[in-house]
Image 1 (tube, one colour):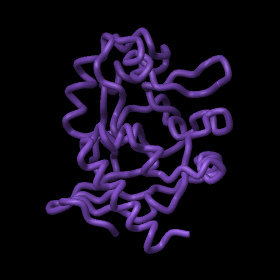
Image 2 (cartoon, one colour; image 1 turned 180 degrees about the vertical axis):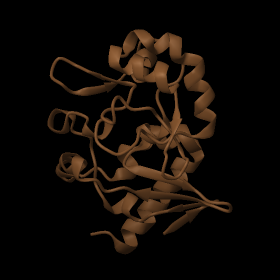
Image 3 (cartoon, one colour; image 1 turned 90 degrees about the vertical axis):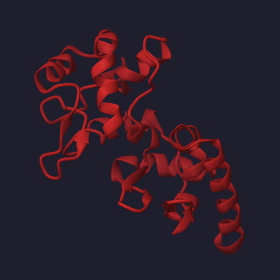
Length: 194
């Protein structure tokens, strides 16, 4: 583990390579799983506030799920905040393009300028998962078989996880943090990399 301020960062973020390959996986991470995407507490109010603006970007099934369950819900296993799901399948905020590839309705609204919030940070940061503890924050690489094509493409292109996630890491923690993370990655690579 590498420590930057109050954050403990798994070295896998430096050693593993990853680039989303939507043409292969079709966005399976938005469909697979037992619950919706994890949400930060401050994101709940945002979802409530932007719901009417993102509705035109969502599927009818997604809108129905959100109207019935609310714009966010909790994981029955651990009480964590998560996005609602459509009949225990895809995230309620998901849309599908003509090729069956999932897209985030929130992100589509953001790209069109309808809202000023891109999407939940947990989605933007994947495959990094954040766990908040009382005295520190852990950033871990999450390995999931639905992302095997992303790992393959990342290896082909030689893109480590932290570089692939520059934008969301900067969005979450700021540019100074990201610059220090890059310095730590360079030191780690000099000591342990191939």
